[in-house]
Length: 599
Image (cartoon, rainbow, N blue to C red; front, side, top):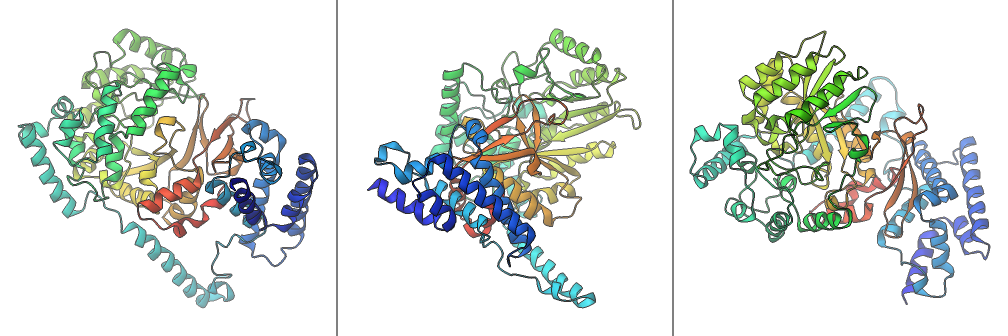
């Protein structure tokens, strides 16, 4: 029965393209079928380039992209890279005598195949109106009709953005004042304590029972923190950041804030599993292979990362460096003066380095004097033209941004000679607060820029959610800089979003915003090599679709026109499973219907 259902389901989808179905149902060899389908697709591309066959121009582009995607997937080279042959898989389902000879296709696989073939046949169905009304006219009449269309687009965007809350709204500010009072009462603190960043670090919430005494937790949240602590996974939330969460669970407003720091049971168990099979190493970016000396990471010709400290005031669940980050109260969180000096000396003796990113961990967990020491040493190197300070304290601990710290840092920012700038990490507009805005403004008043790196997770990926954040960031003086795809680490699977969703967000939602707001680049971090810019198809290829519906991509290194560096093969998140999760939190699948056609 299972085999019969699989064949019936598959034939129904393949019937979207009768010519391809006919080839696949023949008794020819797999190689012969591959050749015939390739000829059919090449001829289809060739014919439509000569004449569009009555297909709307934009539908033709979807068709062209879909055809190229199928041709990529049929490539024997790509089958070898992916370790899977979609063609052989389909052939096995159609002709195998026993169910045990194949893995039944998942709903995700069926949906991927359905949309691919609809695209190939020029029937994607993503366009509801054939031709906009304004295109039929000229002059002012065309302009007015176009203006009506543009207003409709913006109203639709605003309808989505109106669902999200920013922490600068009066009602939210008032509610958080109540949260602050409740938390101070719990710790027997006074307002002068709350104003001191050291108090927040000393009183970081580090266990499930303390957390449950301060906000309502779900059973999963409680167990996730408990499991993390039992397994030695760093965990900590500053009282300030806790005040950004709603006391009551289930409001939906603070989902991204909670998910930022409260590990799930899946995360905690996956971290334990990864440690069991690979020791302490969960180094997805393979920083050990790009570290010429302790405390330094180098992936690019003119930039290095300097890591003077290996902890943060609070720990992000999906941290890229969770393999080396330690609890904030650990004894060896700073790398030590000898190692720090050796790293600084290495930079001094490497004149090709023009820019240094000081990160960690979070360097602002260090005392002012140590921060100034690092800046003084770097500023004495004539070849260092730019110093980036990577810190999340503006978001998680704005009390750390004191006048003394900012004025001390500003001494090293010399226009025309050396730039010092701050890169922070706002994840959601609900994290923005008057305190965070003031922390940003302290740097801006000293003529130093503040940039934002967003990690695009499931909890920030609803329609126009990130566009809303970018707009609010610009209003408080922060420039959107990078949007990172969540790392393909097994323990972060609850956070991961299909690459197609990042492309869709940038080209449909972000695109509606002014250019000053959409200044960030969407990137995929290739292990060992560095950033791959997702915006252009020239930088990656879809090479397969697995039976469970996950796409397999080949990412090109940034050096590809400079040196013969290797490519990287990545198995993505299932689009079908991602959309299913969205519907579970109240999203409408139809609002994301174009996602299948981003390759």
